[in-house]
Length: 260
Length: 260
Image 1 (cartoon, each protein chain N blue to C red):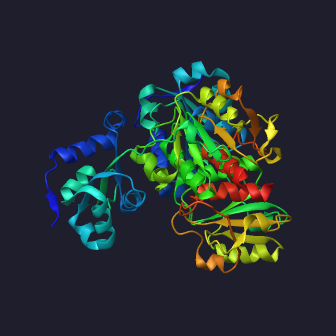
Image 2 (image 1 turned 180 degrees about the vertical axis):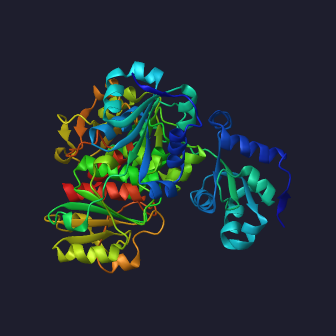
Image 3 (image 1 turned 60 degrees about the vertical axis):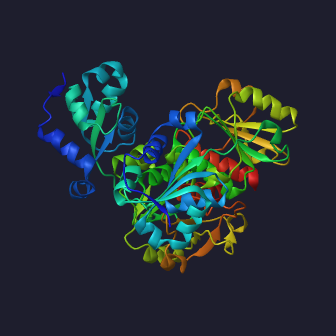
C-alpha cells in the first residue's frame, strides 16, 4: 500500500517545486527534478538515485508496470492527487509522473578515455540546445561531453530536450576549459574548435582517428579567443549566405564527422 | 520628414498586432509580421514588399543608416513611440524595428530544378525546428525547401528561428506531397525519405549526384507511410541508445550529406 500526499503545502512537494524552479536550489541541495513517464523511467533505468517519486492515481492505474517500476526504484514513492500534480507540473499536459533525484557524479579528467571522442560545449546558454546536442551526441555514439560555463544541465528544460540522454551520457564539468584542454592535450588527444571562419581547416579534411575533443562555442559569440588559441581551428564549409549555422546544428554536423 | 503613429489603437498598428498573432489572419490577408533590425533589414535586402515599416524614435536615431534603408524600401514608414513598440513587440527586449510585409510567391513545381538538391519537410510542427532547418539549408547551399503540412513559415517564431533564411530560400508549398513526389520523380529526381529504421539504406552509401529530394518527417511520428511507399528509405546510422535524432538534427546531417 503506497503512501499518499494530497496537500500542496507538504514539505516534499514544496521542495520539488523549488528544485524545479531554481538552479541555485539545485546547486545547494544536489537535487534535480524530472517530469514525465519517459524521463522518470529513464532515471530509474540508469540507476539515478530517486529520492521521491510522485505519481497520480490516474497515471498509476494507466501505466501500471512503468509506475510500479519507477516507484520500486525510488527511496520514497507517493500517490498524489491531480491538484498536487498541477502544482508540480511545468507542462501543459502533465503525464502524472514526477521524480526528485540526486545529481549524478561528474566525470573526472583522469577518467576521460584518451582514445575517445568528446564534444566540449563552451557557454551554451539555451537549455534546448544543450539538451538537443547531448541527445544527438548519445545517438551518434560520442564518448562524453565536457561542459564549461553552460546553462544548468539539470534544469527541467535541459533534461526534457535531452530525452534522457543527460542521464546516460558521461559529462565532465569544467570550471576552466583552457586548463583542461591543456591537460587533455597532454594525454595525447587532438583538440579542435569550430569556427565560421572560412579560412580555417575544413572539418572534412582533418584526421578523426584517435582521441578527439571538439569544442562548440556560445550561440552568439562562438568559441572564446582563449580557447581558440589552444585548439586547431576547424570549419564546416558553407555555400549559402546564412550567416552561420546555429550552435546545435553545427554540433550535429561536427559530431557526425567525428563519428563517421 | 517621416509620419508618426503614436496611438496603439491606430488601424495600422492593430492590423500588425493581428497579423503577428494569427496564422488565419496571415492567410486571409497575405501579410506577415517581422520584428527586429536584422529581419527587417533582410526583408528590405531581399526585395520583400514592405507595406508598413515602424521604427521607434530611439532606434531611428541609434541605427540611422539601417533605419533609413528599411524605411526607404517600405511603401509607408512611420516613427512610433515606445508605447506603440511595446504593443507590437513579441520579445522581451524590443529593438524598435517592425515591418508588415506581403508574403513572397512560392516556388511552382515546374520551376523546381531537376538537377537541384531539395529538402522536403512533412508535418514539421515546431516553428523553431522549421526555422532552424531552413537556416541550415541555406547555409549548406540547399536549392530549396518543399513544405507540406508544416506549421506556418510566416509566423514570427519561424521567421525568427530562420534568421532571414525563409525570406531567401526558395520554398514550394505542397498540398499533396505524394502527388508532388510522383511528379518530381517523373522529372528524373531521386526521392529519399529518412527513417530511424536501422535496416534502411545508410545515408552515407547512397548516390547524391544529380537532382535529389530528401524528406524529413514530423517530430514525433516521422515520415508518413504513404510518403515512404514512394521513396527510397534512408537512415542515419546510430551507435548510441538515444531513441533517435530529433527532426532538426536529422535534417542537418541529411542535408550535410546531400551537399558534401
